Length: 278
Ligand SMILES: [Zn+2]
Image 1 (cartoon, helix red, strand yellow):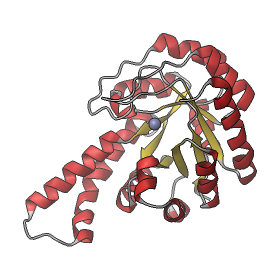
Image 2: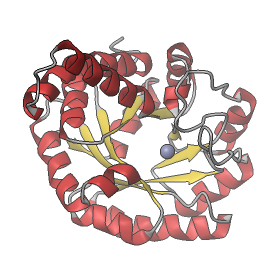
Image 3: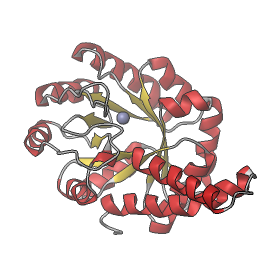
Image 4: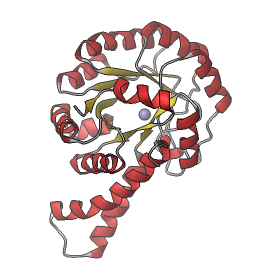
């Protein structure tokens, strides 16, 4: 069975010192490219439907689509809802076949974040669905400013709500188009000293490949969310394909030609964190 949840893929990653990529899906073609890249490298992958994806395509379509890919894959594939901010969004994901959900209570105070994470775990775990939480706030490039994760708050959330993975804010920022994030290793060590669950870095496009590799091998960070870098690869490839032939008009023909470059970039991302196969 290649359909997996976060525990299935992150427990060995944490124990053996490598990372698993949470790749931001926007549609069928990129999801196929991500799975193809993971199969080539024989490593697990997490397909993520974030808020933008769920606005563009209903969860009732995305769930079966992700599951169909996961079920025929040759590697473990996690079907994950990214950045749900309500319990009902998580419930919709569970109802439509997702194997993992993130409940993002990072904009709320600690007690409410703990309560929401606990409530989502209660509806998710009976179905074998894993739960990722966030503490501190990972900001956005040109947008909302980050709030660094406080180790004592991370410990309280993990002790009380026991999520399967915890997203933290230690210098990582969403939507960065160049890799110049500086990870605060002192803050990370303080969190690692009091938290035992796998840690997650959102905004990994902004982290240099060699830094990702070091973090994957040497810290409890074992899920790296990557979106921007792959959306850039898709856009560049699409532009090149269209520029190469002014008469192209067929969507399937265009997107088939776009895919090889996206697979290559995805392999670079996977190799940067999955040292075992790099
Ligand atoms: Zn995120």
